[in-house]
Length: 204
Image 1: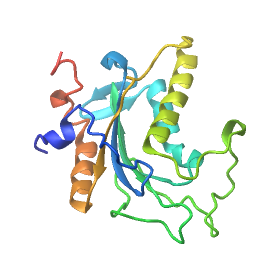
Image 2: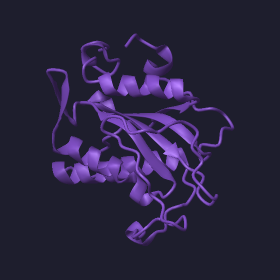
Image 3: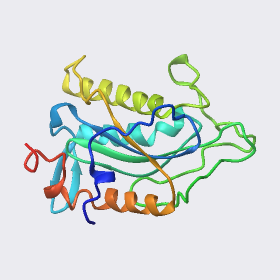
C-alpha cells in the first residue's frame, strides 16, 4: 500500500461544527504516551501482543457492550499505537443507519448489538451509570482510554500514570472506497512497521 497522507498524517482533522455523534463510520488512531512500546512487538510482520496489548484488545472489543449505538470493524494494535474503525448507528430509529458496507474484515468484526425491540440484549450498565444511547466519538474513545489505562496501570502496579497521548486522531469515512483503503492500511500495518510514522526508528 502506497503512502497516503490523508491516512498516514498525525494531525487531527476534527471538523469544526461536525456532529461526532452522527451516524457514520470513523477511522480512529490513539497513540501511547511518548510513543513508548507498551503493547507488544512486531515479529516477522505480525504483531505479538503482551499482557497490556491483550487488555487493549479486550476493552476495544467490549466497547459495543457499553455503547449500544456502536459497531466495530477492522482494528490493529501496534507496539505503541492503535488503529480502529468505528460505526456509530442511529439508535432510536426503526433500523440502523448504515453509511458504508461494514462487512467482516480482519480482527475487528462488526456484530449486531441490538435486540428485536432496539434495546441492547442482556446488558447491564457498568458502574451503576447508564451509558448514553447516542454516544459521541469522543465519549467512545475516552471510555476506551480510561478503561485501558486503569487496567494497564493495575498490571504495572503504577497507578495514575498516563498510558495514552492526550489527543487522538480521527477521520470521517465518506464512502466504501475510502473504507476499503483504510481497511487495507489496518490489515498491513504490522507488515509495514519499518515504514510506520509512529516507529521511532523511522521518525525519531
